[in-house]
Length: 409
Image 1 (tube, rainbow, N blue to C red):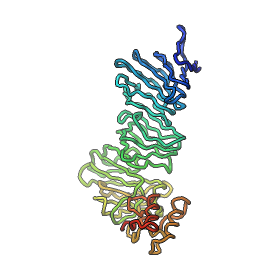
Image 2: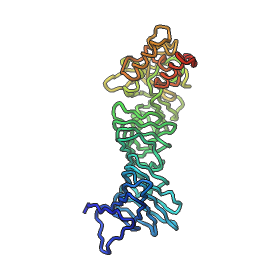
Image 3: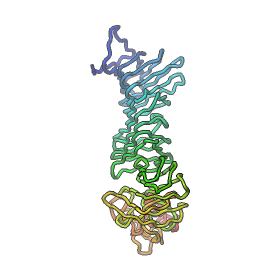
Image 4: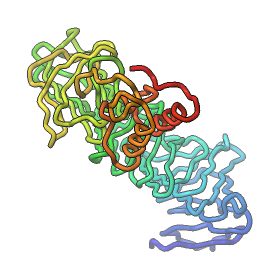
């Protein structure tokens, strides 16, 4: 029980009385290897890449009770002459290599409650889920972009582990817990939607970079935390309905009246229009954007352009700002400092000039843990809402290569 049966033969013939209680490992390295068509407790495809593919032609519907694994850059290719199903009941492990189920006659089926664990391996073809699945990303070698292994609407728990980061390749809905543990998750142009019972669990300092959203019912006097997105409200009397909260992290807001941290919220829905409640806004210290934490206050906007200070009480230990007196909630929210410091983007040290010393200042901030630009907006040279390497490149082009001047304030 639990042992591994290793085979390097081009064709493997199992004895008539072969009883499998462990793993069969196909590991030929010199040429293609035929996978014996049968049910497996667990099966592993290892080594060979494109020069020694593992070829499995399904002559019947098959079941893998335990785990199906690709590793050591193996390429496993499934084919069938007529429609066939391969069902994985427990674990699909994509450590490295490729599992190719793109043959239109082949259906890879994941049982209800199955786990998909991906490091740097990939899946070619789209699986069918009999219910919900859990998905884990574990790479410690390279960052990965999600693919067909992440079913858009059938994910129970999504865990971002490893230490190289993950970028979404498409929208995904998480019905259980989205765990981001000591590594980065970027949504790119996509979004994570938390289902009606979904929860966001982020390790301190590792907020999701991009968009996370959820819709929840609200009722008077009942605290609603919207799945731990970082915005919590207790609605006033007479308030009810369904409310959508969209959180964006990793970029500051535009407009006038505020210099914001790199997090904002859009709140819509609920009744009556303009409903009120008390509010708690949370933030990560990694989103401070060079602002003085102790001075943070809440800002509200109806259009995302003109921002009005709403005050609030800062708790730097809990990383929250609380507005205890009911205010109108629908609209856009962020935390920050009163605006008005932006005069000359690129002027990092605020000496009213954009020269080489500002370039040195920005290099120190970006790469050597040096001080943030005196005015946070001045570090955003190209006015894209972030102070990153592209601002450094923009400033180099301006100072030395005749490139365009920094964007206006």
